[in-house]
Image (cartoon, rainbow, N blue to C red; front, side, top):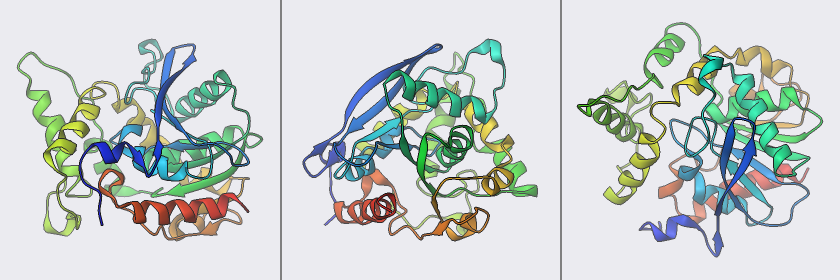
Length: 286
């Protein structure tokens, strides 16, 4: 039976994720932490537009068998944004920032799980520090080209400038709401409909709060995301990797998987999250 209400969504079963901050030179990285055991911590890099808060139920399911660390990417959630004097940074900046964050909290070796933009950052992290990353799990790491790539660059995660009339608030709300109904969110046609209901109003509110607090800074991560030559980087990965078939075919010796659940973590049943966590845990034990 699907869970209902906000309180049940703070964790999974008896597991409750806790919030913490780690220091880097630019400021602080916010993260969720839970679980014990496992050969090494699992670092879960969240998809977007969104934050690690949206993934707390899945992080808690993963934390049933190991320590799980789920940071907000720089400029997202409650993590410090890339410094203005650097201008538009590349994806390697975000990967390096998370490596420095892990150094700061005293974590050496890790397994990595990344989805969407988090998957690209996870690839960059594995490319930068193959000595640190022992396993890599990728979900929804799309290789976009041509008109599809151009459309995503323009519309998916654009810069949002606050204004005194509050019109930017309506844009952020519309994007957040559409993400639950369409992919990509800006193509509101029947062909792009997701087969899912809108969340309850309380969950929409929680999600909106996460989106509005990062609206003026998250565009830097998305610009870096779409400028990253992901197809080339995938062919150079040198760590054991689990990925969807379309991604796995580009990665040397990768193992293919089809996630048992690919919906919204905050509305998922415990059984759905447990099944997905079990798939990931089985690979991490190899």
